[in-house]
Structure formats: structure tokens, C-alpha cells
Image 1 (cartoon, rainbow, N blue to C red):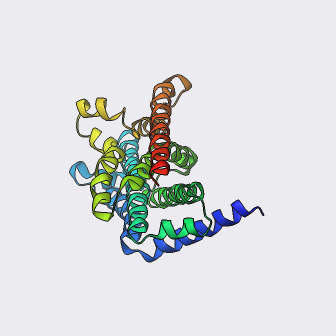
Image 2: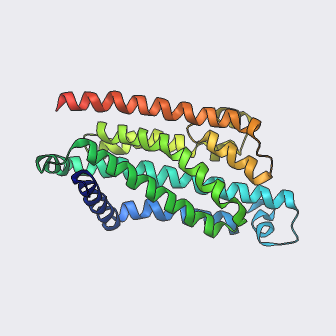
Length: 254
């Protein structure tokens, strides 16, 4: 195994252990799963929750509830599991000078950032899978659900890396993480109004949510997926550009 991969594996193990020992980070992972259970059984108005559990419920109502639960699970998994844990995790290490210590130990900044990005993606995917398992959705949606979740998470992870690197401490991280969290959760608010929906579909997770909606309703086609996919790709490209510019600036400052 090359030295690069050994160091990357060691960094992934360290970051995973730090996440498991931090109650705040564990809560960021547990909340999406808890809300998925809550939305499944206690949706409230019009007895949508009971419709999800009732095999005699109409397909329209059942699919609507399935979409709401799955969409909320994806958005919260990305917003909490990726953005908040990543931003706060980097800021905490900067406060404790852990990053400086790692670099003095012959670990490059590229390896540190790559390890954190990979772990954030793995945590997000694991959280999404748990949300799916408690959602009661048909297993035929599993692969599209995870695939759309990975696509939607990439831009948020890149933006979270930018916010984490720009944060001086955890207090600053709290300020920077709020807009990223709102961007990740934006599709959830789109269900309350068609006007809001027309705006949030262009959010970083909006394309992912639109693809999920079509998959749940059985209307996913190549032509229909073009605009949501284009929106997601544009956000990934812009986030990657933003990360690249800030990362280079931080390297010069150091």
C-alpha cells in the first residue's frame, strides 16, 4: 500500500473516531433518522401517516407520503450529516490546532481535506440508508434514492469544506453553517407552496429532490431528468470552483 493511502486510511480512522466520540456529531446523524420515523407515523393532517401504513390506502396518497418521508430523509441527511458535522469538525480541529499538528507530522493538506470529504460522504450515505430503512418505502426505490442522495451531497460537502476552512472557531462555524444547512433543506420547504417550490428546485439539493419525486411517482424519464441533472451538475461545478479558489488562497496565507 502506498504511503498516501496509508495516511489517508489513518486520517479516516481518526476522523471517524472523533465523530463517534462527539455527542453533537452523533446527534447530527441521529436526527434525520428520528425525523424519518416521525414523518412516517405522525404526519398529522389528513391521516397521511396512517395511509402510509395502510395497504388499502390509495396509491396517490401512499406515494405522496413516501415522497415526503424520503425527501425529508435525504435533505436532512445531507444537511445534518454532511454540512454541520463537516463544518464544525474542521473548526474544532482548527481551534485545537490539530490540523497544524498533522501537517507538522508530514501529512499534507490535500490528504486532510480529502479524508474529511470522503468521511462526510460515507456518513451521509449511511444516514440516508438508515432513513430509507425506517421509511417503509418499497425497496425498488433504494438504488435511485442512494444515487440521488450522493449527487445532492457532493455540492453541499464542497461548500461545507469551504465554510470549515474559512471558520476561525466553532462560533464562526455556527454562523457559516446556517446558510449551507438552509440550502440543503430547501426542498422540504417547497412542499408548502408552489411559488417556493419553483425557487428551491434550483437549490443544490433541488435537482436531487425533483429526480426523487419522479422516481416515486414512476414518471422518471431521460427527458424529464435533464433539467434536474443540469441543476445539480452546475452546483457541483460552482462549489468545486469556490473550494479551489479558497483552498489556494488559504495555502498562500499559510
